[in-house]
Length: 602
Image (tube, rainbow, N blue to C red; front, side):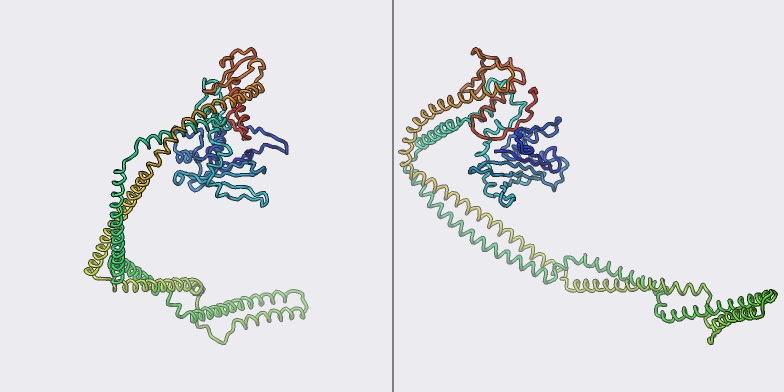
C-alpha cells in the first residue's frame, strides 16, 4: 500500500483546493521519505487527521475530536471562511497490489457546514488504466469499512500513523498505553486466541442460563392458549382497520364535495369580497385620474393635431413669404451698391467696353433678385420670425410628445376598464353573506369529520401492529419452548467441550506469544542499534510477555535504566519498537509520523 496524493478543500486551515503529491519518487529516482515543515498552527497535524478521517470516517481517532460527536467534529473541521453552499472535501489516492497487479484507489469524503444527518458522503473511485479514467465503485463504497480492515486495520493504524511527540511514552512508561497494547496484540495475532476464549465463556454462560431456566409443559400450554386469543384479537383489529379505512375514504369524498360546492357557488369569491371591493375602488380611482389627465391634454395643444396638414401648409407659406421678403431687401441693397460702383468705375481710366461688361454683370444679378422677389401671388400670411419658430417647434416636438402621451393614456384606460369589468363579473356571482356562512360551515364540518376518521384509522393501525407484534413474540416463545428438550442435550455437550477448547487456546496463546515476542525483540534491538550513535549502550531489548513493557540490557547482561537515555534516545527507542512491529507484521504499509524530528538530532 503506497500513498500517492492527498487533496484538501476547505478543511481545517486549508482554504480552497490544496493538492499534495505523496508519490515516493522524484525525476524517476526513489524518494521514500517525504518531509513537511511548518510553523506552529500551520496545518501539519491536520494532514495526519485528514488521512485518518479519509480512511476510517466516524471511527477515525483524530487529534482534535476529543469527546465531540461525529457531526460536531465535521462541522468544526470546515474552514471558517467557507460559504454554506460550498463543500468541504478530502481525498486520498493510494496504490495497492491485488492479484499481483497494482491497483489505484481514490477515497473521497465531502460534507457541508451543519452536515445532513450528521454524516459525510463517501465515494470510492478506481482508476482504469485502459481508459485512463476514474470509475466509481458502489459495491466497494458500501463495504468500505470491511475492506479497509483488510488493508490497514484500525486496531493497528496507530502503529503506522502516530504522533512522534507522544510516542516517546512507549519508552518512558512502565507499560505501553492501552491503545498500543491492543494494537500490538492485533498485529501479532494474539487477540484471536483471546477473542475465541471470551466467546467460549459467553457461550458457556448462555447455555447454563438456558438449562437453569427450562420451562415446564404447563408454560407451553399457556403460551398456545394465548396464541389463539391473539389470533382472534388480530382478526378483529384488522376488520376494524378496514372499516375505519372505508369511513376515512367517505369523509375525504364529503370534504372534497363540500369544497367544490363552496367554490362553484361563489363562496370563495364571497370570502374575498372586501379585497375585491377595495381593488375595484382603486381601479376606478385610477380610471378617473387617467381621464383627468386626458382632459388636461385636450385643453392644451393636442387638438391642433387634428389640423396637422393645415399647419404644415401654413409653415410652407411662411417660408415662401420669408424668402420673398429677404429677396426684396437684397435687391434694394444691390441696386444702391451697383449705382455707387458704376459712379466709381466711370471715374477710372477704363475702356468703354470694360465698363459695359461690368454693367451687364451687375444687371444680371439684379434681374435674378428681381425674379426671386416678384411673385404672382400676394403675401397673405405675413408672419414674423417668432411666429414661424413657434409653429416649427409645435410641429416637430410638442404635438408628437402630446400624441404619444395621449395614446398611452388611452391604452391605460382601456386596460383599467377591462379589469373593472372582470371584477364586476366576479362580484356578480359571489354568494350572499347567508349562503357564504352556510357553505363555510359545511366545509368546516367536513374537515372536522375527516380529522376524526383519520384519528380512528391511526388508532386502528396501531392496534393491528401491536397485535401482530405480540402474536409474533408469542409464536417465537412457543418455538423456543417446543425445542427446549433438544437444546438441553446439546447444551450439556457444548459446556463440556468448551472447557477442553479453552485449555488448548491457553497453551496456544502462550507458545504463540513467546514465538512472536522473540522475533519482535530481535527486530526492535536491530532497529534501535541501527538508529543509536552509542553502539555499546544497549545490546539487547527484552519485551515482557504480559504487559509488553521494554527492558534494556548492555553487553554484560546488566539492565540499563531508562532514565539514562536522553529524550531523543527515548524517542528513538519508541520508533524502533514500532519499526520492529511493522517488520514482524509482514505488512507493507506506509508510515506517517507527526512531529518526527522534535527530539532527534541531525
